[in-house]
Length: 316
Ligand SMILES: NC(=O)c1ccc[n+]([C@@H]2O[C@H](COP(=O)([O-])OP(=O)(O)OC[C@H]3O[C@@H](n4cnc5c(N)ncnc54)[C@H](OP(=O)(O)O)[C@@H]3O)[C@@H](O)[C@H]2O)c1
Image (tube, rainbow, N blue to C red; front, side, top):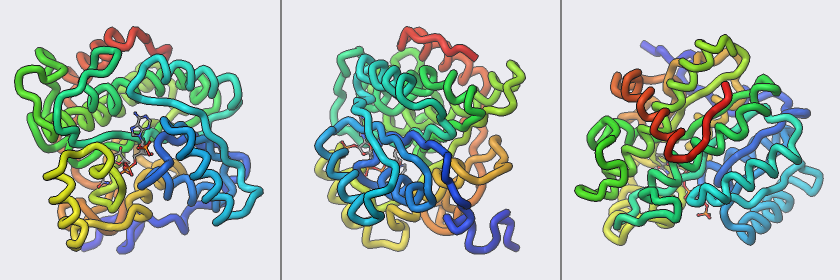
């Protein structure tokens, strides 16, 4: 029996209508799913503002997109390193100054499987610092503009949320005692997803029904993720895995975030991604989310700790 609400093939970008007049802010568009998502949104007439850490790569990305799609596409970038809270603040302020409407913020950028514990200049373990605290601050700072635009926040998580300890290690957030590349990556992606559902709770409490928050993931996709931040052995294993039918193209990996960014009347309480072969590939739609990702007590505590750690209080 097929239970995918978008039919047997699942959600595809054919469903996206004309995006003229819509503005999308996307993090991490210099490669992988972020690049593919930006490209498809531009193809459909959307305006894309990219938040990337590397200015040269961003300029090259814009040049490539213009070469492929024509010079009249509306694409720009603002430099932002999610690993530095100060950089996130400056970039968010620049967005608020220059972008009058945010229909969708897609938090796509991340690092993964960092082999050794690295502490950022803000004192965070690097995967938690980039993937969770960086995005938490960015979303919070842009929230007022998103609310005024009746917009959406889309968080790109990972099936990794369901690996590792399946909760937040509150007594050692930096994993000083038991650092493991995958354990910490899994926790950082769980933290990202938990904050989506906690944000939904807060929006309901504040009666802010017009803002939406979605959680999705790209399954297993051929991107630069492991090459950029993973250790030698993980990179080797990933190279082999890429040859298997358990890994799909980066373009297909972009579909879940595109769906969450553009599909009208999409149920926020679900978790979206590929639905075949243990959610690594295939038809995109809603699928099971393990209950620990919606543990309200843990999520509340995580939110409080994150506000304290970033020194930023959300104004919902
Ligand atoms: N690929 C998969 O199989 C897979 C599986 C599960 C989840 N995901 C998730 O999918 C999302 C997209 O990743 P991807 O697979 O497309 O990887 P990718 O090809 O490595 O793209 C990641 C993007 O994030 C950017 N980025 C990394 N660190 C950053 C920082 N400190 N500040 C700002 N930008 C930063 C990268 O910029 P640079 O070019 O400068 O490095 C790049 O543009 C991530 O959230 C990842 O966790 C991917």
